[in-house]
Length: 202
Length: 202
DNA sequence: GATCGGATGTTGACACTGCCCACACATCCT
DNA sequence: AGGATGTGTGGGCAGTGTCAACATCCGATC
Image 1 (tube, rainbow over the protein chains, first blue to last red):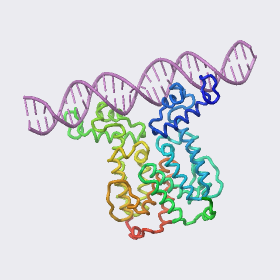
Image 2 (cartoon, rainbow over the protein chains, first blue to last red):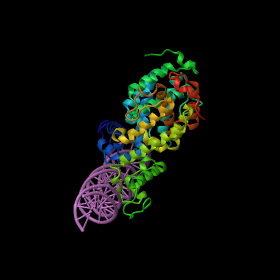
Image 3 (cartoon, chains in turn brown, red, blue, yellow):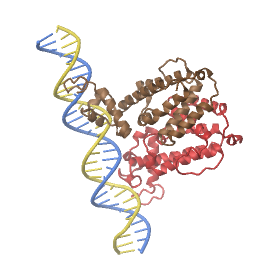
């Protein structure tokens, strides 16, 4: 009834509508409120229509999470290649997209069950490494700590830790940002000095 | 029927049995499988008995999570006061008690709704700071970044980040342990030198 | 252009869940 | 002895995920 307005029997792009609706509900009311029936209701279809596009509720959530990783990746790319800016972007995503962030890195989904989700996650993280280290890495497969830079790994852990602490409400965004900025400058120890040499934007 | 064996009508210590049963199910089948009815079934009581001890499913989960924080605290205390050992203990908890860890730091529970849970969390984290910094801090209330040591905050974020990455399966335990150990020695930069001077056990 | 197959959406049903109600039982206090 | 109170029971309701059978539409093929 929206995109191509065929006959009102076939939706047009129900899969897209379901993902959008699910994200909307996720953002407003949390992951617990995302039910197949409610999402179907929002999309204006019967309670079983979603099963033509997602094999289960988990699969729908996996789709939403995968798109979350795509957005995270886009934010990282847009942040430029300075470590501090990358960290800020990561943190901002965790705050602005809190419910989605918690879905992406939570216990609800087992990434092994959803290859697309796993790929999206790896892709985002490899992008982070590629930007931070200023070199090209292949995508796909699990994160290999021997491939990813040791510096990037450490930076990732710090930022990820702060992001979770903030998302959980254990720490204020201000405190985390301050600590993160201080760490970025205060503790460089350039084992992988090449990546740090470039002045970068901001 | 267990502790004091009164009349088999009154359970004896149902609250305890419910918490134990819930933790058991949580460990074996994940948080999604923890339902009030199933927990009641395991405890051998009617489907409504749990409501005499927990006002909702969330409240039961909050109780389980609070006990998780107590166990985490115990592990930290037992680990001694060397930073590396503390980090390893934190990481070990995330791996061994993965479902509980994810419940404790996940989006399922809003800590603001459960004061006991919030207190348990703060208590564990303040214990971490107290051990790491070798000084006494007051307990209760949210974590104050001006009270907690800057060094501890940074260490906490790193360890917490690695713990989540491992728990999510994004990183192997070995890689995280290695990176953590390397970081513990490689990047001291003792702003808060007092805490590090003591040789400590192990 | 008619026909048929596959993709997509619908209706109905079942088992399960959280939560509310009224009721039964046990214990304790006066 | 006799309520008052805490604790467990049984029934019921609305909501959910999922399955099976059916309806409808689109596009390829004759």
